[in-house]
Amino acid sequence: MQFVRIGDTVISHRVHGLDSKKPAILFINSLGTDLRIWDKVVADLSSDFTLILFDKRGHGLSDLGQPPYRIEDFADDAIGLLEHYGISQVVLCGLSIGGLISLSIFDKRPDLVRGIFFADTAHKIGTPDFWETRIRAVLDNGIGSILDPIMSRWFTAPYRRPENADYRGYCTMLERQSAEGYAGTCAAIRDADFTETARRINVATLCVVGEEDGSTPPELVRSLANLIRGSQFEIIPGAAHLPCIEAPSVFLRLLRRFLSTLPGVLNG
Ligand SMILES: O=C(O)CC1=CCC(=O)O1
Image 1 (cartoon, protein in one colour):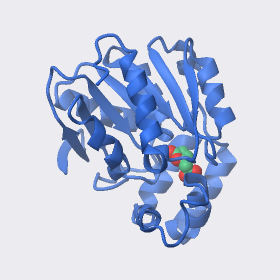
Image 2 (cartoon, protein in one colour):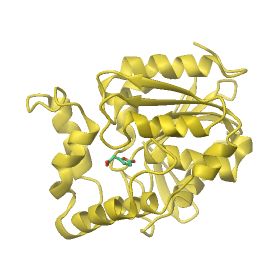
Image 3 (cartoon, rainbow, N blue to C red):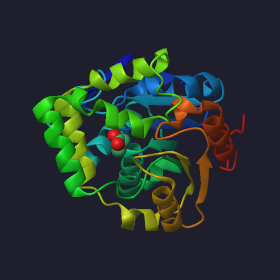
């Protein structure tokens, strides 16, 4: 694990294979997860690419900062991290809120963005009432109180069998996130609408989604693809909201195929 101070917030992160000659990919996590969700993806890509993973503020080992947050706060952290490593162009791989953060990074610094791989995300996720209910539940009763409904959005029923040790591990990951950080991140999603940014995107994009995603269902993700000129859309079978965990080989195949279409990016 590596740590860097961006402004007044310490951000925990990992950089694999830092090399200015290799194309860089920045992975941006979903709500309630930390950078370990990319482990299976990183193992495959690290010889061909510079990979940057980080814990959003309020998650993992990053500082809490001052919740509630705005999507722009996370985007500033990500941009600060890229600047810290002198990375001037990057492919963004944004999962769920990570897609909203990708859109905000594009808004702020389009020069940094070489392409965007949107996974299980949209230009607007959920309704204000939905997020308010979740914020209240977490602040009043803790993250454990919402574990089961969240897990049924994240993973398919076969993955959620009690004897699956990986499933138990990811339950623990969610339960150990800071309730204040989690609720502060829900507030950022509640307040986000990047419809106009999505319409302005002028870099290559691919939108993918697990076929059983209960958080950003396929039709919602398709509506993001429809807003973006030239965007492609793919459904990942046998996965829900976190295909990088549940269907890593399909996720990787689509990511590598996307990377191979970008000018000047290796296809590995
Ligand atoms: O917790 C969920 O329902 C999944 C999710 C929504 C936005 C995000 O980042 O994760």
